[in-house]
Amino acid sequence: MLAERMKVAPDTVAYADGEHHKLVVEFAIPGAPTETIDVKILEDSVHLLAPARDIDYVSSLALGWPVKPEKAEATYVNGLLRIEVPFKDPMEDAVKVAIKGVPADPATKSLVG
Image: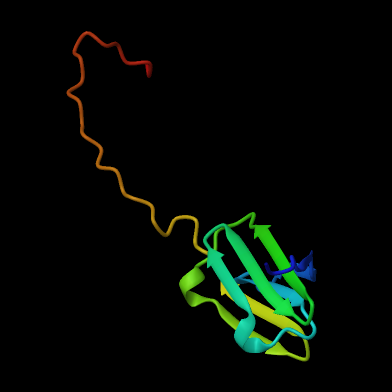
């Protein structure tokens, strides 16, 4: 039977870039080999699993604003994993609703006098 590895939350910071166009998330995960890092991003969350030596770095972040996960980019240098992902335009998936006119009721009095 495999011994249970200790789970550790990495030091993490998440913030909007200077122009507020994308989210930047940084995880300090020293000692994690690049090929073992597993990061998954949804529109509303980021999930991390990164085995390192005798521990597993784990994290799940709920995001306050939706992002475009398919456009995420990540770099890993000197134990710091940096993910940049653009924010989703809140109206991007909006659907225009057709408005049907209703004939005016002749019995309705005008409020403008």
